[in-house]
Image 1 (cartoon, one colour):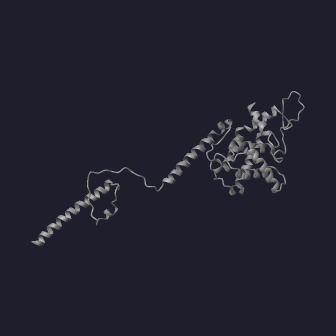
Image 2 (cartoon, rainbow, N blue to C red):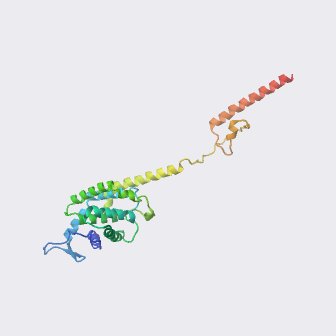
Length: 280
C-alpha cells in the first residue's frame, strides 16, 4: 500500500494540461468487483495502479533514465538546479508533446510544473527527477508496455546528445546543492549500486587529482639531515652562494665539499712551500 500511496500523491498533483493530456490508467471498465480509488474526481483501479508501479520500478527503465541523468549531470552533483531542469523540461515537452505551442504558453506550462516538481526547493535530486520524467513518459506513451517507455528514453537520450540545449547550461554550477547529499528511493539502490559505486570511485579519483594539482609545485618540508662535520666554504666558491640557513645537505654535496676542502688544503700547503722557496 506504501507504493500506491506515493503514486496516488503524484497522480493528484496539479500539473499543466499539456502534461495531463491523456491518462490511460483511468478506470473505464464495468467490472463490479474492481477496487476503485478516486483521484481528482477520476476513478482508478488498484490493479491498474499496481501495473503502473511495476513499470515505474522496472530495472531496465530505471537504468535508461539514470543514463539521461548522467548526461545532464556530468559532474555528479547531488542534484540539478531549476535553470537546468527548466531547459530539460522544455526539451521534453517539445520532443514528446506534438502541440503547436507558442513560447509564452510553453514557458507558462514549464513554470507551473517546475514549482510542483521542485516542491519549493532549489535542488532536484535523482529520485524527484525520475518521478517527473516517468510521469511525462507515462502521459506521452500510448501503451502500457515498458518496451515503449524504454524506446522513447533511448530516443530522447540520442536527441539530447545532439541538441544544443546542454551547451547553453552551466552544468558545473553547484551553488544550489552545497552541503546536500544525493537522494534515491530505497528500491533504486539495488539496481543502481554498480553505477553509484562507479560514481563514488570517480569522485574519489577527482578529489585525488584535485589535491595533486593543488600540491603540484609546492615545496614540501623534509626532515633536515644532521651531520657532525663542519664545512667551511669561502666566498669564492660557487657552492657558497647556494648555502642558506637550514639548507638540506645531501651526502653527494658533503662529498663534493669534503673533496674541495682537501684540494684547498693541498693548495694552501703548496703555496706556503712556494713562498718559502722564494724567500730563500
